[in-house]
Image 1 (cartoon, rainbow, N blue to C red):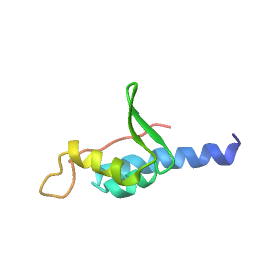
Image 2 (image 1 turned 45 degrees about the vertical axis):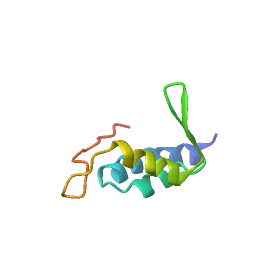
Image 3 (image 1 turned 45 degrees about the horizontal axis):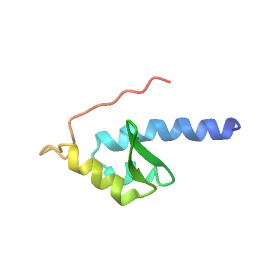
Image 4 (image 1 turned 180 degrees about the vertical axis):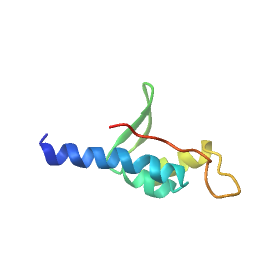
Length: 76
């Protein structure tokens, strides 16, 4: 891994909560298009953007203002 890879990962980590807090589940899931997503030891989604977006939609409550009323803060 070189410095360009590290910057790309850092940018991904910073974009993810922005999309999630805006209820942009498709955009957030697209960041993980090439990833296997685990919950604990259980594989939840394997390289499937639509499935990951659907999973988030199934357990994140979106309020009438169009957001989950969350605000993630990233410290890097």
